[in-house]
Image 1 (tube, rainbow, N blue to C red):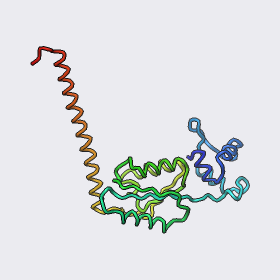
Image 2: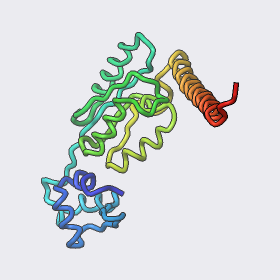
Image 3: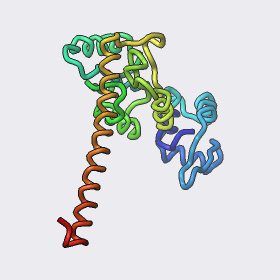
Image 4: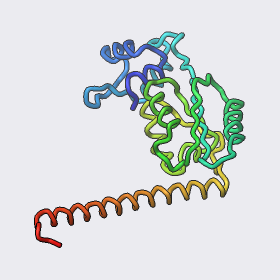
Length: 211
């Protein structure tokens, strides 16, 4: 189910035109709260109907975004350049954005990934391309696919089988995960220690005759 802006781009018309056609009953839609949502199948049928869609609007421009990621370990500049070169060489549309991250694939708050998601919401591209799925995320790539699909963006993987990173990068990601949990555990223990100190201080205030 696509929002108005993403649906209009899929069909190749202005969002206001799509709203008008929906009001006239020329394309079905459903309401989710106050928003209209359109089914991809209905939009594809609309594109294929020459009586309802002008011929100039039947072709949807393919706008690509490239996402490139390496782990936080040093000496991976060659991998960054290699990923981008491979994606550019295999492009079949217009490349409008390139997003890069030097961070573990286990991190959710990667700056490049956050910018990619924001640009997808703004409708700046229709396809995200990566060399391998684990470049997008070590775990949870399916959730990212689903999230991007809601904005009318498809994820394409150049090499669907296999992993881009070797054992060294996998170990680096694992150590990043261990460090994150260790830091959180240390923070919990620190908070508990502060709470105990505050509790003891409170007991002494309530009992002035104490030691």
